[in-house]
Length: 167
Image (cartoon, rainbow, N blue to C red):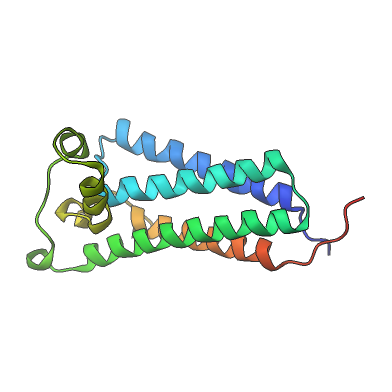
């Protein structure tokens, strides 16, 4: 059995990332789900995955180039998985242990410096513990954890796979 070409794999990663970004904006606009800071951080990680993948498709490098792109893909997948894991952990807390809620991101951008906003986004808030939507018993961060873990595995696969010489 022949392995799929790296360029095809990275194209599928980029397409998956784009589809999930479109779906997240659909959830926000059509279903009026307001994203929490950790949700926004996961969107940034997903956009990073898509960016790395589309750069790999456009660049179409040889052996070590794909390994480099695979490494970046694995790093973005790991970052997204950590963010999704944190949000799942927050959702599993009893209501009295959930951190206090905070204002919207738009308000924070108006009053705080970027470093403080970044700190708040990474630590999350009480809004992050609310399960606003679920499919097959999994909340949004549960599904994104699955996707990010898959992307981490794809990135590691691209780093470690043996390649045939390209003529």
